[in-house]
Picture 1 (cartoon, helix red, strand yellow):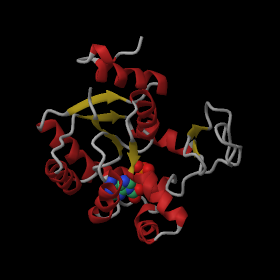
Picture 2 (picture 1 turned 45 degrees about the vertical axis):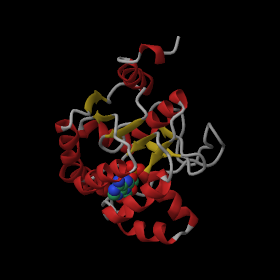
Picture 3 (picture 1 turned 180 degrees about the vertical axis):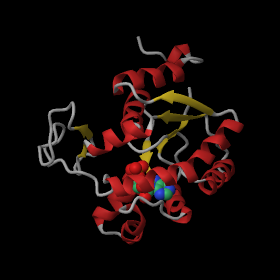
Length: 221
Ligand code: AMP
């Protein structure tokens, strides 16, 4: 079984949703650096306030800050799914070194690929629940801004960085900083490319099939 998984991809490629599905299916703890930063912000912590300078405009927070929350979260864990981390080569190298010090290695890195056009469409119609973190799309989930979350009832909102301006910055950061991370993992033979354009259940099946490909005993009946 693969116990240490990273999900990379552009904004709205489904990283968070797929991480939650994989976590529930395989019993793996999942962490999103983006969600952790939003949580820190809503708690009013020093890290959250510091991070907001970058996050609302779609920039990346400094490596040191991202790594600080990652190592705090890992603290003793040996199995995990990371969504949206590492996002720069500096983070990837520090992550490799830190895992090695703990006697751990990554098992697989999935790159969820999506065209810019689909990213834009999804971002403009994406709503999130500040209560439970669920993500919905106005085009096919029969919800609008302010609707009660179908999962927990809290009012759905649009993320502050889900704007056209912030998206341009996020996509350019993604190309400049995160694509080199995918090359780093490709060179190490860990990268698997997955088409993220299908519906979430279809995408999940592709990830599930790949994870079980060499572990038939893991496949659910
Ligand atoms: P996400 O929820 O993954 O879209 O992340 C939201 C925002 O949090 C990003 O646009 C960045 O500002 C910040 N962020 C999340 N993960 C990282 C990371 N690994 N490195 C730097 N910034 C990050």
